[in-house]
Length: 274
Image (cartoon, rainbow, N blue to C red):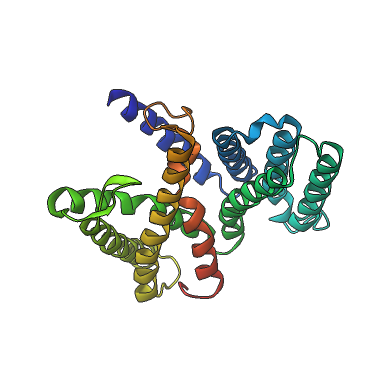
C-alpha cells in the first residue's frame, strides 16, 4: 500500500507540472512518452515485439506524430502533419512486409498497424483538444472522465453491489457498481463545470450536456478497462508493465482514456459542452 501511495503521489506531481506547461513543448513530449509506452506494452504483451524493426517503427511513428503538435499547435510547418507521418509509416510497414514476408505475416502487419494507430489516435485526441480555447479544461475533464468513474463504482459496488457484471473478465465489478459509477461521474462533471464557469470565471458551459457526457464517459471507460483486462487474461499476464510500482504499466492506468478521449474530443468539437 505504501508503494502504491508513493507511486501515485509522484504521478500526481508530474501530471500537475505537465498540465501547468500545457502550452509548451512539454505537453506533446509527455503525451508522446505515454503513447509510445502504451503501444510498446501492448506489443510486448501480445508477443508482436518479436518483430523488432517493426516495433521500433511503430513506436517511432507514435512519438513523431505527437511531437508534430509542437509546431502544428502554432500552425507552422503544416505540411508535416499527421496524414503525412501516417503515410510514411504505412509505406515503411509495407516495405518491411514485402522484405520479411516469410516471418512477418499479413496478420502481424495489420495487427501491429491497428494497435499503433488506435492507441496513438486516442492520445492525439488530448493534443487536439489542447489547441482549442479552454483546451486545458478539456484535457483535465477528459482525464477525470476516464478515472473518476472507478471511484464511484468502487464505493457503490462495495456497499450495494450484489449482481456480477462480467465475472469471467472482472469478478469484482457489479451492475450496482456500474450504475453508481455512471451517476457519480455525471455529477462530478456537473460540479467541475459549475466550478469552472462560476468560480474560476471560465467559459459558459452547457451543464446538462456535461452531465450526460460524464455518464457516457463512465460507460466508455468501462469498455476500455474491460477490453484491456480481456487482453491481459488472454495473454496470461497480471499487469502490462511496472513503470508505476503498485499500479502496473501505462496501459493499466490509461486503458479507459483510450475510449474516453476520442469521445470527448468529438463532444467538444461538436459544441456539446460550450
